[in-house]
Length: 498
Image (cartoon, rainbow, N blue to C red; front, side, top):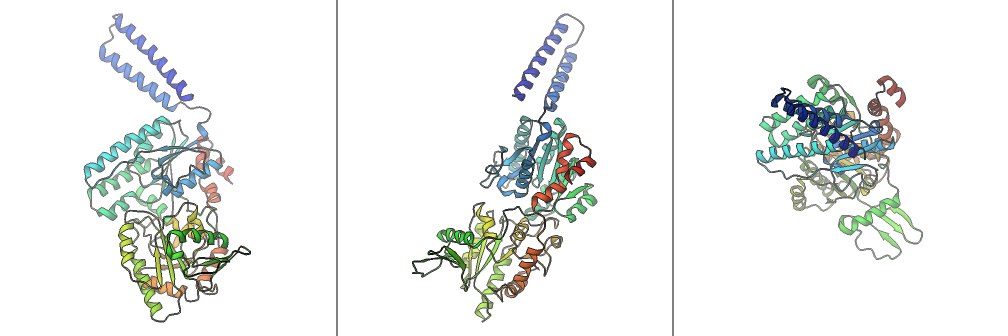
């Protein structure tokens, strides 16, 4: 209704303005045609800008959350939207609507961007950027005026420039949440010296400092932004949502049963007992509905991935081959079921490698899990493995954050700032190659399934040192940026957030 009224006022004023110009021009007042044209264009632009910036009573309570990617694969931005919604802000989510989106959890308006094909040729990429720019510009200008535009970077090309332009035109505050640098991710495929990578680096350096405020995921990135980009950012560490917790035995068994329908690695073979329900990990007594873990069960090893260049899964596969060798050599170790979840461009490549392995004591499966099943599986696993190796060396893997929320110890591949999350010999282990990972698996699982060994110690440490969840962390570090939209001074905002 507000947009319709604004349009009516705009057309009425335009008609009056045009009538006045025509009257003066027709009356022979000496006004030239170029002068009339310039006045008309100036008037139209002024009216257009006025209509773009015209605020109503709900302006202070509206925030746009922008990600130029799948909403369902951007959990941090989903968490932002959830937190804003809980504080009664009207959230407009702009992005690609994937399978695991927030639509069922939030009362939000979701503007879905159209997906465009990407080809190997530079012309196709340039065309995509131009079309996405126009599409995003149209979406942001057509929606109600927002107090803030909070966008994820990467991907930032072309969303940083477009979001900044719209913020200037409409008087919104522009906030960038730096997850990584886009040009470093592009460099994994093209190399540092590729013209497109160099252009992307210039683009981020030029447009990044134009934001009103900046968030980032690590102190290492905060320091780098300040030193090399001239950007002052606030570190907002990823924290697990409340859904990530240790899974009760009954829920574990229900998930294992569902997975066993499609994945034989979870299936218990040769059971003829009619009063029990079995998986390779668990047993349910049908007479009293009790669930227990099997004494001779394999260890459940879990890793999640988007199957991209920044995760070298050949490291894990080689480590599993070495683990197989340990078992065949007589080491007292359990069998393994290794579950690798996720979708991505390199998945088929690695599935072919997995199919070529000749492993007897290690079983590997690569399921795609429903959004509600993923935290249940994390909370059921015995050990997590993370192969994320930051392209910039400045971001942290959110999958490890979620694992720690489930009190799941982790073996993670080393990179520069990983110590901000994984504490070696406290909540997990850090490795540098496949041989070291294999030795760590051997050491951690040597006492399995007893909880008295190192693996059990790490889990107890995680239970004891369990920190803030996302909501409390967000309230303390982010909410006051939103409060500034109502022109409250920063000092008052900080006092409001406690």
